Length: 137
Image 1 (cartoon, rainbow, N blue to C red):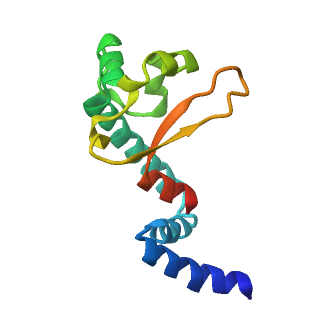
Image 2 (cartoon, rainbow, N blue to C red):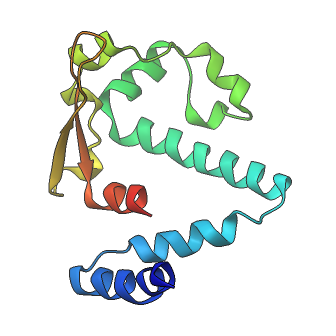
Image 3 (cartoon, rainbow, N blue to C red):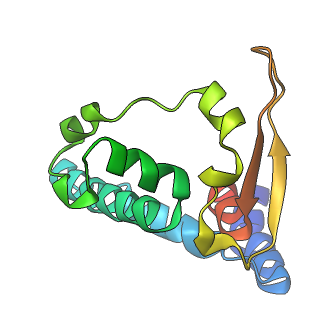
């Protein structure tokens, strides 16, 4: 009973009060969990296409990488197409931190999060409010 009150009354009121959209994100996630595997696959493919184009257009590191590899987001047809791109390593992140940040988020306030550094070197990651709200959902 308390869980239902929290989920359907307290959380929506707190979200409304703070201007958070996590309740909307949660509703969308709850609806999508029942999609067919084919629909999920199509949604994932489209989301990946948009992400690759976003990275090419707004992230200096990825734009340079794609150009150096002779690759463009319009070349993407399936996840296997990504095999031509090198894996992003922790060393790449440390060496190219600023170039890995999207210019689309420059006017936004970001929160800096740090990993624990359990593998040797902690990483600092900038997250915006929307990403925090998706994680909360």
